Image (cartoon, rainbow, N blue to C red; front, side):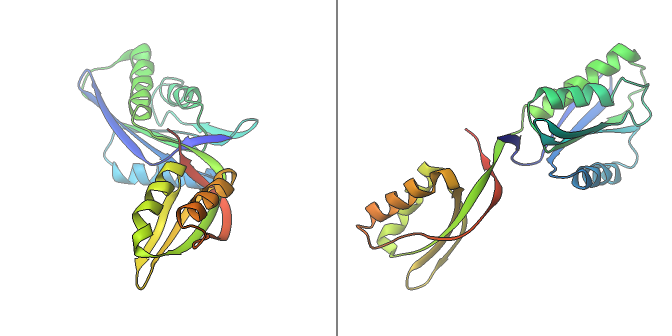
Length: 209
């Protein structure tokens, strides 16, 4: 099972007056990862360095990359990539933006600074699993709506859509492995009056506790 970031994150640290801004985002392909690095560079065009790294895929089928972006060789990209790999996550891209503060940090200081910046942003990241997921749709009588939402939350289903007319139309996404148990729960709640409809399946991110 591939573990990956649920959503983008950003953190900032200051080391001897140099600012290190660490940005992170899910990336399901090399193209997405490179596009993210390019966007961060465009966001901070006046930065001294924009050091990028990514790991795409998981397990034995991974592609990784890092760049020092002008810092001394091995002092920036490699430490950032090592932190990313150490997180155990795949499909992840990161950029550490540095604004030079006027004091040289030395090779050891740079390695530590880029490592700490990577750790700071990873500490903010919520994790997700990439799993086969099912989209379910259901039309509910209004008295059942709150109980349905509670059951969906307890089952870890993601609410995709809801609309209100004569009945409440709801679309949720749930891991296929939990599909039958959730459907049975809704049938039970409605005394057999409501059966969620399976619309489609796809690979999708689902939050981990």
